[in-house]
Image (cartoon, rainbow, N blue to C red; front, side):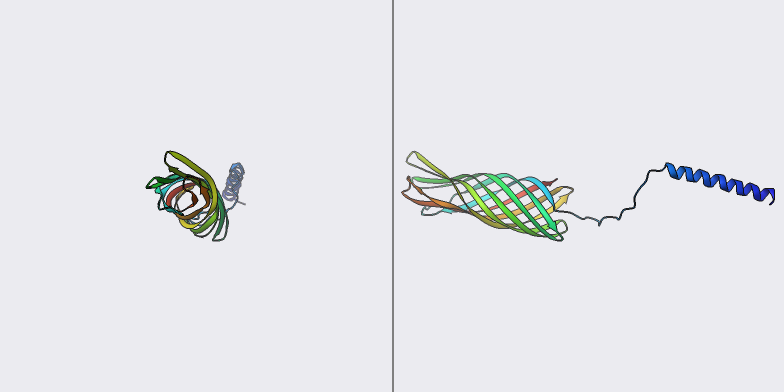
Length: 205
């Protein structure tokens, strides 16, 4: 072997040794498959707030309580493919009230505990919801006040859209029926049924 060939071989061996040493010092990076672009998962817990408007009627009365409502909600979702299942609870402060003659009815607050079933199209979720409702129905007349905390049911639906990492916005409609009570002030059985439409935001953990 000529001196030129021997020098080239020695140079190649030294270069390969140096490259192997540098490769050994590099951090190990396991191979991963790229996730789909813009994928959004609805699974997991969330917490949010809402604002809306409520309107309804009191049975056996000519009052039609209505007003703004606002509150907070929290829930948890499970997702299987495009189907989303969850549970959500909320509590609302309500300004819904109305007066007819000497009688006034109001609904100072209400809340719900509901199941949700929806269909996700990536970052858009269309869902139906229903479950337990509870709240206060209050009557006022002739300087007296009478109120009951009562339970009932609610049913509705909505649409929710993710607009930023961990954040979503929703629009929702609920129909709520709070059960009847015999009011001494009215001398009859009164219950409150009402509709609510509200906008909300959620933070997904």
